[in-house]
Amino acid sequence: MNLAIILQAKPVVVDSLTKAKIAANSEKFSQIDPWGVGLTVIGMFVVFMSLLVLYLMFMNITKLLNYRVKQRKKEKVEKEKEITKEEPVFTGELNAAICLAVGLYLDEIHDKENTILTINRVARTYSPWSSKIYGLRQCPR
Image (tube, rainbow, N blue to C red; front, side, top):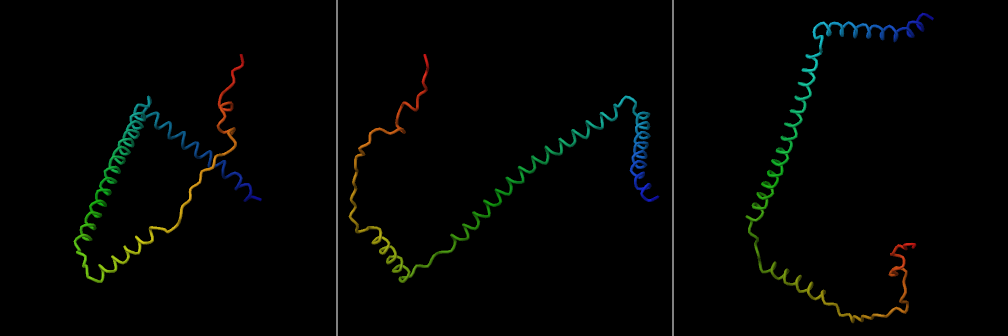
């Protein structure tokens, strides 16, 4: 029974202790800074410093990203240079295989089909899709 009373009274005691501590601290602060000028200066300093830090952070992020893009381009160019430095070796067998592949490809391009193209005229000339009646608004006069 006593435990239940203590558990119910505990939040009230903690709440009153916190309120008492806040009241004591606010009285100390009002004695130190009665008009609130110090608090205002500190608050403005914190806001402007955080804005300065954010500005510097965003500026440096852009520079960092641009630097990374330039590095990737340099790496890509260097890899292409390394690849192009190797000279291909063409042998007679390789040339024959290339010629055979090109010849087979060119033979398959030309189909031996007869193409018959017919255009039939449609008997229906009226279509609601092309009707001007549905596209205009009617003005009652």
